[in-house]
Image 1 (cartoon, rainbow over the protein chains, first blue to last red):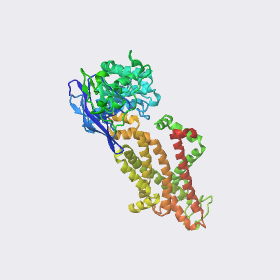
Image 2 (cartoon, rainbow over the protein chains, first blue to last red):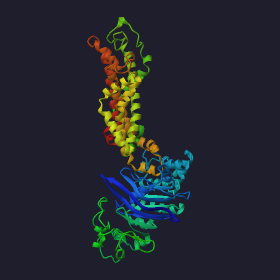
Image 3 (cartoon, rainbow over the protein chains, first blue to last red):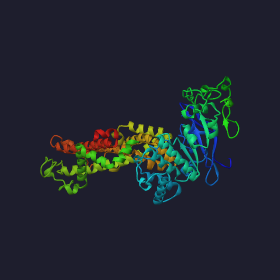
Image 4 (cartoon, helix red, strand yellow):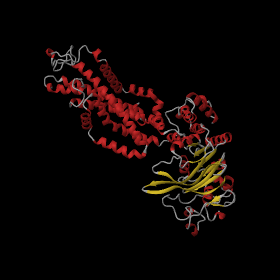
Length: 333
Length: 289
C-alpha cells in the first residue's frame, strides 16, 4: 500500500445472486484515497457506486450479495493496514463509526423516529469512546454546534420529525463525525435536499474537512456537486471504473465517451464550440449486469463505437499523469 | 415509518383522547377495570366464602343474599365467579406475557436474520396448523395439568401469532435507513434489535397482545370446561360452567353468570384492541377521531 494512501481498493468484485444466477455488481474496481482527499465516485443508478461503498463498510446484504474477490486495504488509526474485505465482523464494528463513517441519502429516515436526537448522537459516542451518559450528551451538543445547528443545547431534545431535512442531514453529519473518523463515505448526501440546502451542506462538509482533515469518498450522480467537492473523480459504469483523474483534468478534457456523455447531459457544462443546441442524452440504458455485452460494456451506447470495440474488453489503461481510461479511442473523445 | 412516528408524537395523550371520544371503548375499559378490581379484592368485596358448603341453601336462584344464586353445594356463585375471574384474568395475562416474550424474540430473529427466516417461518406455520385447543390439551397432558402448564401451553399456542406480527414488522423496519445508520456506527446487532427495532415494532405487538388476551381467556375457559385446565378445586369460569351444566334445567344461572363474564371480558378486550389499533395506525386514525 502506498505511503500516503488511506484506503486502497484493489480489484474489488462484489456479486449478487438473483434468480439462481450470479452477477457482478462491482467487477474489478480499484482506486485509492489519500489522506485529506476527496474522491468522487460518479455514475448512473445501477453503476455499482453504492455497492462499492457498502462493500467497504461490509454492509452488502448477504444473502443475496457478497464480496467475491479483491482487497479493501485501510490504514487504521494505529497505522496498521487491514484488509476490510477479510476482517472479522467483530473488528469491523470498531472500524464502522470509529474509523470510517457514512452519511446516507435519506435524511428523513436515517434517524430513528422514536428517539431524541441527542440520544442518537451520544449512542455512537458512548459506544466508541466509552464516555458516560452526561459527557456523551455534552459532546453531542458540541458536535451539533460544529455542524452549525443553532441552539444545539435545545436541539438535543428534539425528535427527528421536529427537524427539517437539512437539519436532519446536519445531525447525520454530526453523528458521522462523532468519533473522529479518518474517512467519511457520503452516499448521495445532498440528493434528497433542495438546492439551497444542498449548497449549505456541501459548504459545511468542505469546511469540516479543512478543520478535521478527514478524507471523503463522495458518491453521487451529480457532476455539478463533483466539480464543487472532489479532488479526484472515478467514473463508474456497469460495475467498472471507466475513467479516473483529477477533477480538473477530467472536467476539462474527458477521456472516455461515457464521461463525455455525462457532461454533455448537463446544460451548464456544455463548453463553447459544441454545436448542438439540444441537450444531449446518452441513448439506451445501463445494461443488465447478468447480460453484459462482449468487449467494451459501453460500446452499445457509444458515439465512437466501431466494430473493434466488441472484441476484448479494454483495460483501464494509464494515459499519462494520474489519468486512466477504459477506452481504445480515448484520444478521439 | 410514519406510523410509529405518529404514535410517538401523539403518545399516551392521543390514546386517551380516542378512548374518551369513543364511549364504547370507555365502557369496555371500565368493565375490564371493574372485573380486575373484583378479581383482586374478591375476598373483601364478597361477604361469602367461596368454599363454604351449605346443603340447606343449594341451587338457590339469585337473591339479595346470594346475588348470583348458589351452586349444588350451596356455595355463593357471585363469590366463585369473581374468584374465577382472578384465575382466568391472571392466566390470560401470563399467557400474553409468555407468548409476547417468545413470539417477539422468534419473530425478530426471523425478520432480521434472513438466513434463519425460512426455518422460523416454517416453525410458525407448523405450529399454526394445529387447532388451538387441541394443541393446548396435548401440551397440558404432557406437562401435567396445573395452572402453570395452562399458561405454558396457551403461551406456546399463541407464540406463533405474535411471532408472525413481529416478523412482518421487523421486515419493514430493518429496511429503514436508520438501521443501516446504526450499523454504520458500529452498533452491535443485539443492540440494534433491542433499541432500534423493538421500539419500532411495539405498537402492532401491543395490539396483538390485547387480542391474544381475549383469545387466552376464551381458551382457558374452554380448557377448564373440558376438564383439561387447572384443578377443579380452583374456581374458574369454564370450570363453573362445566359443574353447572348438570343442573341446566333447575339452575340455569350456574351457566349464565360465568358465561356472561367470559363473553363480556372477551368482548371488551376485543373492543379495546380495535381502539388501540386505530390509534396506532395513522391510516385508521381519522376514522377513530
